[in-house]
Image (tube, rainbow, N blue to C red):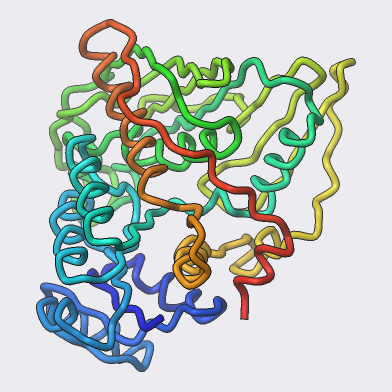
Length: 369
């Protein structure tokens, strides 16, 4: 399919650089409200720059990737669907559950597909963890933990303001990687509860060029949640930008017959460890999965895998793995965590989704040129 991009910021370069690895992904044009940014990116990759309106109206474009800022995701993806084109969005798909439900309804009405990052759960390490769990390698999953905690973004990002405003914070910014991977490993969520707080009402930027400037904190930056899955497992999820250091694994899944340590779901690759019922943790030999091979400055980076799977699924008439129902359910989980922190109560999910189909090594190879 011919594909266009709206939004020519930093992340667009990754899509344009990695897209050519995949079958069916032919990015032919880019657009941005900043026409100079579009022209510069187009010249860098030898493709065409168009205006946003022209790209939406282009008869030669079948899919448009939405790489705008998160606050614009709903508006832009809605325009893509109204233009009669399939849409693929960077995370988060939307900022509210209401937006997600409206987008899903519009896509269904128009018979169009919506896909959304993150697609890192399609990586070799995470799919190997999925196979171990599906094959009963650790017995019945009963519990788990997931931790993504650091000192925050103001130490390195040149303009970190938006990270600390409603619609961002660690749950909505980094949480999609963790929540989506938990759903692909364990299935949909039943209910959540959380405690939320912020260590500071203002934070000092220590990166350049705004070193020393104070910025307001308008959303929780320290969130500790309990997630109950429909299949019965209970998982603790901690997301925080108020932590200087910790010793937790990124993700641990506990079964009746063993434990598995899952690497950072922000990335496609990484090392797995597994124990038997005796509790002796051992490294897991990586299987031969193409999306686990280091290919990008020492890391496995297969961004566009979810997009390629959506294109192939549209042509094959099957569900795609990074689909709108999964993204909307993940949004339900994350926004309900914040709601629980405000209300002090458990929050039941109002959505569900199918557990994404596993992506075997053979399935992954079929997506590559």
